[in-house]
Length: 590
Image (tube, rainbow, N blue to C red; front, side):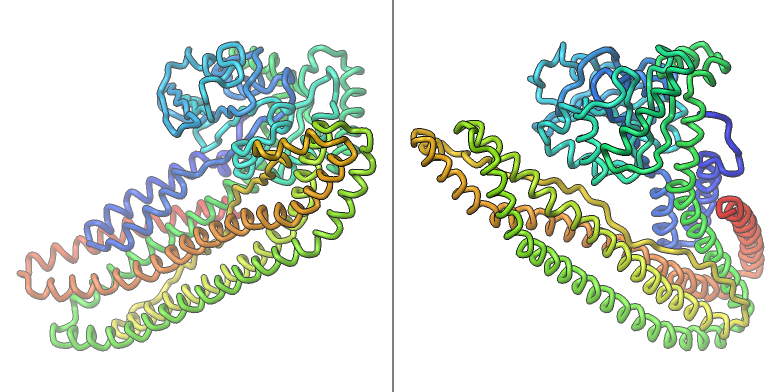
């Protein structure tokens, strides 16, 4: 990627945070503060496991694979071949090249890089006879080191014409997509139809007009204007930015380290736009959240060390009395935490009930209109033969299921996100208030100033939803109507499909219901765990500090002095972390 402002570079800031996390883990483990260790490791895992799925989509021969190789600057994926309908290739960072094939059977197999084409190309794996589900490729490219996963997908026609479950399930995980068109021709009907459906799953697109090296400057400008207009008119996108590029020239320029040719290829301008998006919509939020976590845990450890130092200076009898008083206050605060968890569970149950109610209402309201559209569709295809009519009705039902639920899902997701945002703010504030009360009770007893860093916590969910409609004539017995006279067959097919409408809508509503329940359950589990870890870390740190102070009273004076020296050293280390993270947080939020 192009040169960046290092003050906003995701990679170096993430590395600096992880370095500070290592120090915090060492200090917390040394003190036996297991809750703080677990919490800060959760933050490290969030940073380390951060993945940004960037899918490259487009019709066959648009140059998708060449673009991926161009972004990486090396020929990793085989080019000029037909990708299979059901195969997705995911590229992620690895210290050395590794390829893992995932099969539909659930088995996995490691292969050599040079064997890749034997699993992902039509020539070596015709009609996916090897049963490949997807392939993971690890490669030591700096482009992938910041958590970007580049995803090569099959061509538009094969991917969406067959409506495969694996592709639909995957697209719901995509953070952004690069949609490739080219100058020959600018946009096909298949691509327009694909975009109509893909934008229901992917909410941010980059549009690239590839192969500009085949045109003059004037021709390219004309093609850009025409293609931009076609995409906007045929797909409903508005005011898109279309990046002109030659993926082939970009790859050649990177391989030759030719900066001038690289700029002329159009890749640098696209990469800069991609980077801004990553920092604004993905990386910046993650860095801000992680820095807030580190600041809070570091300040909590520092507070506990100060409590321990102050407590160690109090006469033992007085210290034990203060310890008893503090436990009384902490028990009441624990009850606040218990009440908060009960309230959160109640609100989640209420949200689940609303989703189920909204779904049932959507189905019941939709059935009459779908039946009316079915009658119109049936009348419009009066000349269709038996087999053709069955296929047409199946396609009609699939389209109606998507039409009924796609708009509803957008509305429901918006509603859920608003509820989750409000709930996140409310329960995060309750958690922060509990932490303030814990520290406040401790500071009053030991005369310590309180400095609190309150980190946000986000309650959010992802979806892996897909639709499925059974064929109108599926079992062997269903073939019997094909021997009927044509007029009787048509009447029978219409009646059978009319009877299927409500069943198919409710069956897919059940799939959606399960998806939402799974999302809500996982999201709230993670959210509740994060909130309680914060409280546990604060409680554990203070209790551990006082226990250490009591133990210090039973040591020799030399040992006591060593304890005090350790307090000062650890406080200085944590102070440095707090200063460092504050400075990074200012840069990230600027």
